[in-house]
Image (cartoon, rainbow, N blue to C red; front, side, top):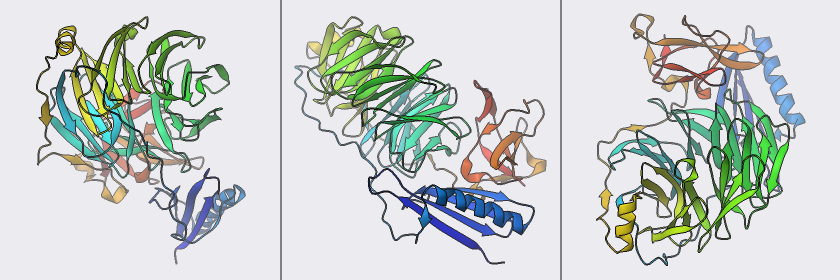
Length: 481
């Protein structure tokens, strides 16, 4: 029986939507591909008992999209729209002294994604490369993703990369996979994840909240645009945009408070009781999470591109558009200002008396932020920065785009400790459930959407219970044959 394909597009002149939806019926299998026009998109496949039921399911999916404004189109006739790239200016520093840079790694492309934990440093760039390095500056591995990396965020010990193709990739296991597929018309600016719930701020000032099963929960449109800040905890989601910072209840039931800031918010940070907003008008503000009240201000000499704190906000750090980095005490007194020795810091993070910066020239920079090193730098004495090189034989990990690209394992070869999971069709959704004994049967698994097939079984090396009642993969995924 011949394959039947229906291709639809929704393209709005105001730029709000530019996406496609394609449904293919091949016997009893229905495949759905969707995403931004001009991109490969995400693929889902489902099997049905009969051809008639498969056709009926396909017709239902097409009908739903047509009612939402999609219309038949010819693939390739419309061009892809450009994704927003962060265009920033970076002037030379006006500081008299340069920061004590220990090492510098040039990623080769514009970058502003960073995450630093106890084990390693992560940096992602506009070419889609994510590198991991030791705290001493040794390059350990490289992930090659399909599109530019906007940001890197962590949830417990899982690490996620938000990309320009609208996909958020889980980089925690040996093979990266698409854990969340953001709506094709959402131009990701920043992400935060709390207990498996993904919070997305976008170019239009919107906020979208998605659960661990990649299902939309709620969304809001702020009074401003260009939302470069989103932070979340168990109580609220803190959304920073051109109009200030707005806090919403974590369950989406309503707005908790809104505070205008001096200039649009260009970066955000959070501690237990406060959020920090770096603004276009040369200031970092500390806002109470409970009320939104401004508790302290940290004045810089140029627009603030990034900010961070030491634990509990004892010290506040900021990077401005003039290639300078600052340190303040908790009350707002400036302790020092130094040049980065390179570009402006677009992202930063502090750990164990070191300040890690991603700069406008695409470099990951490690600064010795100890008191002794800073005092010496202010007197003009700084170490010679190590220029880190990437090894020729560096491991490179790429996402598995389809089930066929996943390694296989036979039933007789399932490794000790391997956990078997199965793809199951439940109420029109493809769920992944644990088959092995010893796991909570009502919990589903956060699993690569691109390799889900009804009835398929996979073996994972590690499965961990996450706060919120679901399982996350920690290790290699192989198809059971």
